[in-house]
Length: 203
Image (cartoon, rainbow, N blue to C red; front, side, top):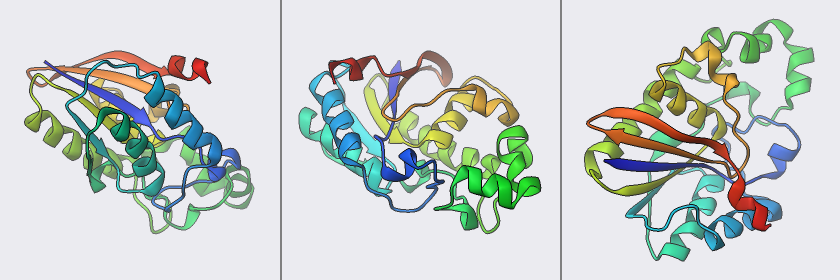
């Protein structure tokens, strides 16, 4: 049995401004660092064998704080990156909704058919992140592994674990620094926890 502690990165300035980050390299805000330190100081797991992270700075910085606490290195995995939002990256959600109501309207209402210009679809992102997750499963039988990734990417991982259609992805909440727990037995997933920020109560 493998347990994957799936963690969304801490807060960034763009999160606060409701701007799409995607593959842009945005650092944690001071608040985001504080969230990572709070989790590391009050870890919701007693023992971990490995830490994987997306290679985007906000995830790497979050993973680095946790890794230091557990005296582990961070294994970078580009497959765990956020969805590439192409031309929409760095833009505010309300601004995009006004400017491209037809194309961007699908982002929340019909994510299965949403395709950001010069970006990737949620289906493409899901296929990519699950390649990474399957590699982790193959390498860490009967271990506890932390995986630090991103809001949409984590929703797509949980959706795959639950066999949910992509058009329901936004039904899964995912706060900054949220913890999700996936158990894997013989390749079968059980979702044990979703979107928990209990560890931040020590804030």
